[in-house]
Amino acid sequence: MRATGIMGKRGVRSLTGVSAAHRMVLPILFRKVGPLTTLRQLYDLQEVDLEIDRVNAQVAALNRRIQDEAALLSARQTLAQRREAVQQMRRQQALHTQAVQELREKTKDLERRLYGGSIRSIKEMEALQGEAKGYHEQARTIEDEELLPLMVKLEEEEAWIGVASAALAHMEQERRALVEQLTAEASNLAATLPGLQAKRRGAAAALATAPLSQYERLRGAKQGQAVARVEHGMCAGCRVMLPGREVQQARISKEPVYCPSCGRMLYAG
Ligand SMILES: [Zn+2]
Image 1 (cartoon, rainbow, N blue to C red):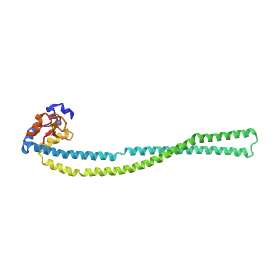
Image 2: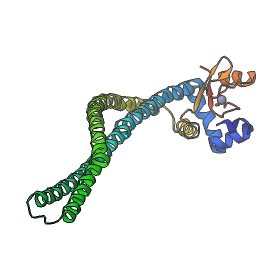
Image 3: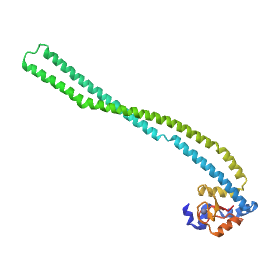
Image 4: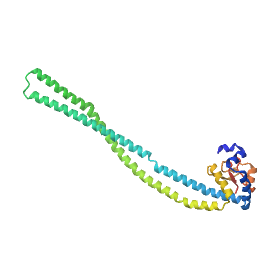
């Protein structure tokens, strides 16, 4: 509400919603019980309201933490992705292994023909030997360039997954404990609300309608603080030094005095 500070008294008053009718009604109501009494009652009511606000904000903050599973979800997702990558590597490994087996079978078939005594010419023998050598080399290439790096990678990935799974299990366990603790804190805090609300009803019931609705309007416009204490000549609501006249007025005036800077009702008690 920094802006109200430069708007002057007239602007502040219109912002706070004090109608002409209220300005006429308030002094009469205030005069009945004494302005300081009414302001003290409003101030006490505000203490209860601020406490209710604090409790509600704390409960909301706890609930946000209870619901915030971002870290856990991210860890679960990473692990699932790495597991899927391992599955993919295993499928590749199976394909390469099968290819190597097929090449070995082909080599064996050629060797059976070579040493089976059915070869009639050297040319035919050399051709079969060349073919067998080719299959053998293909198999070696797949083993050295595909299967071996894949197995090294798989070993690394599985070690990583083992560590990450244990870490995730630990995280989940800690999270369960934390949620249990936060839930207990939130419910303990929430349990204080009915008492505070009863106290609030009592405090509000002791006040006349006009100052109460004036208070409600100001509270809505001033971040929950309608009444500000005067502390060492300063408005405790906006921390601005008050003119001596305002401080004096706040002590003795029969009608509410407003902080010229933030527009809150001043309580000099
Ligand atoms: Zn102020």
